[in-house]
Image (cartoon, rainbow, N blue to C red; front, top):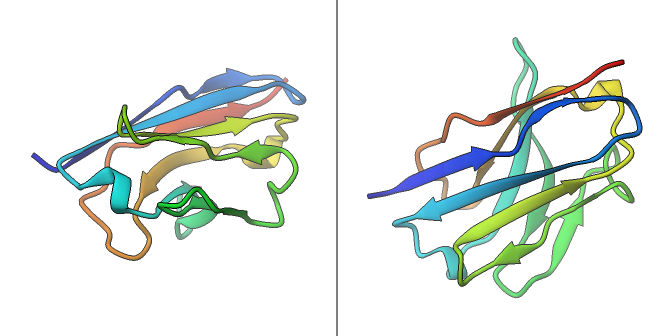
Length: 114
């Protein structure tokens, strides 16, 4: 069964940290490029971080230096480590393969507020 399950979101104060997880099943995870997206109500999803099957990664300007995107191919999991969070990071975070998308998961809500 093809499935993406995101978790780890929550409420955090500005300057705080969170670690998100995305567990994939049924997609041949180790061969895929995976990306984390974020979406604000009424706006399109935007990619914030991406990692290819060889471990090379890239980041949007808005998160570079604050977020990292490691992956564990044994656990079929991609992570988003978020540091120095800002109110503008508030969004629903989702993962998927940007080149060959599969059905989207529910995402996980991140709220940065004092």
